[in-house]
Image (cartoon, rainbow, N blue to C red; front, side, top):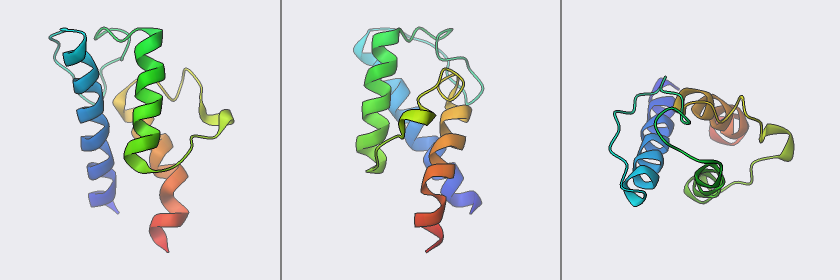
Length: 90
């Protein structure tokens, strides 16, 4: 299970870094970094949400699209793992 969580975290980190790169923003990003503090705008958050849905092949439920879930890579990872858990355990 830990390997799955680490994989999710790596993939989310790659998505965030790609968005920052697109915006020519150079920032140190770690799992606890607040995404707004590293330079993501509200439009970037929408792109990140769409990127997460494409990367993990699922639709984020409306109830999960909250500022709390999009605060950091860590909070995003937790939400994704919770959403994919039943599918992954099968």
